Length: 419
Image 1 (cartoon, rainbow, N blue to C red):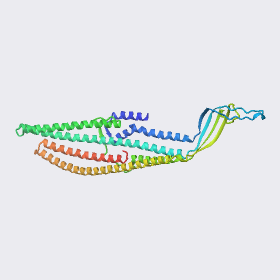
Image 2 (cartoon, rainbow, N blue to C red; image 1 turned 45 degrees about the horizontal axis):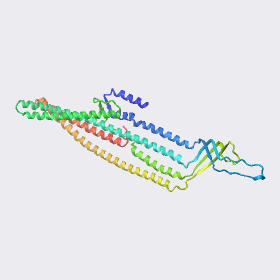
Image 3 (cartoon, rainbow, N blue to C red; image 1 turned 90 degrees about the vertical axis):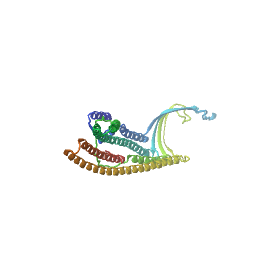
Image 4 (cartoon, rainbow, N blue to C red; image 1 turned 180 degrees about the vertical axis):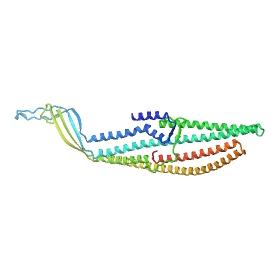
């Protein structure tokens, strides 16, 4: 019910959103994803399993019954010396009663089963969290793709403005006899190609927005502005590799299973008491129905099982080694991912420095062209082209910062951080 209310609230609020942040997208994803429900279910399942295991040491009450028939019985004849003959026992045996059973000690299996239940629950919870984090990485990647699509479209729009200015100049020169009609057609061809690229990017952007909307359960539109900080603080956040922790829990679970398997060879002690009514045949001189009871303690101890327990234990330990190898491989993969991300960050920082220099140079050029325009040396189109080049460089600079932020977010999420 709480999850339904959260979804409805987010849908109601998102209908009025003109902008959305990356943190809002990830928060909505965590609150509304079906995987989040599993965390509560796993917690409940662990408590239910513990309650079931605790019942192993609670007394159990059974209704018992039996009926049998014997082919022969013991007959005693004293002869004529004793005038009294004992009754002849019946060949049938019947009984109906209540039996109480109590486990006194099961070799420690129940205690180990509780620990195994906790480890299994932890592994399931960590697996769910890992899947949520994978969804977060997917959502963050789509979010930054949308931002890059927006910036790229803006750059292409500026390039189209430059081409339109160039087309206008070429057409004027053609009218004055200084250019051929083929020159005009070439510029028109470039414009058509550029228009196709813009349309393709807009389609990709709309598709990405729909995917992000489905992942986050937010009503995102083409007009929505996607906002994010350029730098993220993660120094105070404890890094947790949930998938590694899950594998650690599974390794501990397999080792614990090996101990539990070994406990099968431990003795087990149980007590039982029953009260019944019938003809049990315990008293050979009685053929009447009567009540009877019994109580006692039983010992069960498997002394030899042809090494079946030892083989089961070896299988569990082998499984632990297999999972450990998987963990080592995953750590190696994560290490390679982090090194790749760090390398890309260094590369983007270098490109960002070059972009800063380019923006500074274009700023000087535009300032110079503005003075020339005021003096009547150049035309409006010449100034427009250089101004658009500066804006294009500034947008490109913003793209580098966007890519840098995307890599920082990817690194945080890869290390198990939370935004």
